[in-house]
Structures are given as structure tokens and as C-alpha cells.
Length: 453
Image 1 (cartoon, helix red, strand yellow):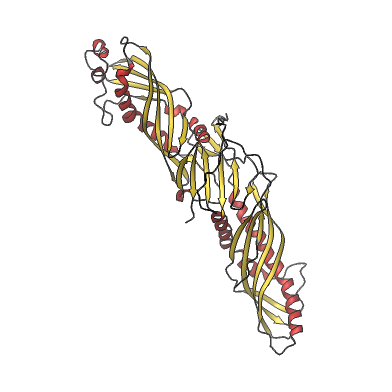
Image 2: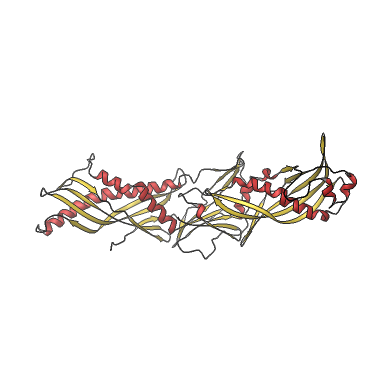
């Protein structure tokens, strides 16, 4: 069995966490997948092998070995282990066949099985601020060596030759592969700083709140998301006063993304103006005809002013930023605004009937599609209803509770869901497939439990 040695990927020093925002916990599942994929997709060992036999300026030929070529590179086996406060230990085991003319003049094959070890520090690029890996201290350790040289040759001569040859060939062949793989992995972070659009209303940028930290089971990346309107104004995240933390119970080595309710609230603030609507459809869903006659069934005063049916026009304005709240298993979207109802008149401007202050909340269902967070809502409860003004005389607004509740569910909630179709962007790094995530609502946060295909 091959001995597994380790490649260290060191973490940065612990920084101050910025609450509220978003937290990403990268477990062994994703880290192992990313490094393995980088090694496979870059085909770096095969490329290094192809370059091994070429003459390079300033590189002296190996004494006793000519026409050197490398073939039959074994697919690397990679195993990772976290080192708390330092980074990640990565174990790379591989092998190959080196061919050429030996000092005896005969064709020679050396079949080598080896482990590559190096220390790769997880740094922060000074120019971009992005995380990056940097390799140092690469070493090659031989596990086994077999050759077709005659067995009757002096063992000491053979061992000395092999030792000299392999120690000259392997570091120059294998260590650049480690650097090349890290470059490939680093590119997976390159889009992290790019602002992502939220419809046409603004952008979201997942800026790092602090340097990533490494524990015994994961690397944690803390974000201080920047939510900006189209004109550049930043929407602040409201601090709840409670530190964001991942709940217990997730499998060791697994990965999760946590999005705070405050962050989602800031994102939805970009959509506030889109939630203002005027609705003048005569027939809406399962509702009775939208006219003054129907309204008079709840509010008799309307019939006195409009004895003949007139079509209704409803104007809803959201005058406070939408707010997302979360408790275990339940997420609500709170909307505060006004609802003004008009009677339409042919050839004239609609006449106001009354203006109401409303506060209602919607139950939110979350899903992920094509790596964007989607939300769909349904009416949870009409929390308060008060009359600000009336052109049909004084009335008790409680008489309208059922009418307004049904109206919001059938007429307004579809509008909200249309607005939310723009979806919310998720961190763009390491080619994570968020579509596979399992979603869970906890206190003040939404958690995506990330999975690998």
C-alpha cells in the first residue's frame, strides 16, 4: 500500500467577523473535490511529463541518462486533512515510468511510485484582496522504484545511479505541477469580487469581512456583503445584535452557506419600488367581480355613494423597506404600506374611496435554480389595518378585513412573486453547485447545506 504523505495548504490568521452578513463553511467534501478536479482538468502531470524530455536552456543533461522520456503517469490519489490554525494537509500519491538510454548503453525503464509534499499557504492577494494559495517547500519522497537494469550489476552502482538520477529528475518534473494546480484552484476565486446584478435595481458583492480561518473540520469564509442601488447608494445591513453562527448537527467535513435575515432584507430593499402597483383588473383569480357593488357587501357606505356598480382600481404602495424575519423552520416577509381604492369612471380620473394603512406578512419558500436563490410567497397574515382617510364617510375598518385579506392573496401576492423572479445571487467561487443544496431555515438565517454530485 502506498504511504500517504501530505501537502499543506495553510489558512490565514483569524480576523474579526463582521455581523450581519453571510458565512461560508468549506468542508473536506468541497475542498477535496476542488483540488482533485483541478488536478484532473488541468492534466498538469501529463503536461509535465510531456515537457520532461525536451531540452531546456540552462538545464544540463542528466549524467548517465540520455533520450529521457516520461510515460504512463498514474492518476493522482489525493487525501486532505485540516490542520487547525494552519490550513489543509493534502496528500498526493502518483507514479510514472521514466525511459531512456542508461550509462550501459541499454534501454532503461524506471517505474517510480512516489508522494509529493509541499506547504501551500493560503494568502490574500494584495492587489485584488482575493484568497490565494502559494506553494513552498515542495519535496518528492520515493515509495518504490523498479528498473529493468540487469540484476547482476553491482547493487551499489545501481542504487547510486538511481538515487542521483531520480533526485535530479523528479523535483523539476513534479513540483511545478503543484504550483500549476494551485494557479488553477486560485482562478476559482477570481469572480468573487465581481458585483452581481439583482434585476435592474442594483448589485450585490460578496466582499470578504475578514481573512478565512481554518479549524479541525473546515475553512470558514466570512462575508460582509455590499448591497448597492443602481445609482451607487449602499444599503446598510441592520445589526440584530446577535453573532451569526452555524448550528450544530451537520456532518463533519460537510459544507454550508449561511445567509442572514439582515442580508436578505437589504437585498429586498432594492426591490421596494417594484412592489408599488396599480391593479385595475375586473376579474382576479377566485375573487368576485371587482366593482363597487362587491365592495358594498363589506362596506354598505359605498352603495350610498355609488348605487350603480363602478369598476375598482387599487393602488398599493410599500412605504417601508421590506423586512425578512426567520425562526426555526419559518421565514416571513413583512410589508408596510398603504392601500387606496378608487372607483373608476368612464372618461374621468378614478375617484378615491378610502386610503388604508396596512401591515401584512408573507410566508417565504426558498429554492435554488441555476445557482440563484429564489423566493416564492403566500399570504401569512394581515397584521393591522387602519383608516387614514375616507370619501365614503366614517366606517369601521374591521368590516374590510376579510375583503382586504382575500384581495391581497389573490391580487397582490402574484405581483410580489413576479418581482421576486429576479432571484438573489449567491457567492461565485470554486464552481460550487448550489442547486444540489438542502435548505434549512434557522433563527435569523437561511442555511444551504452544500452537496457534491
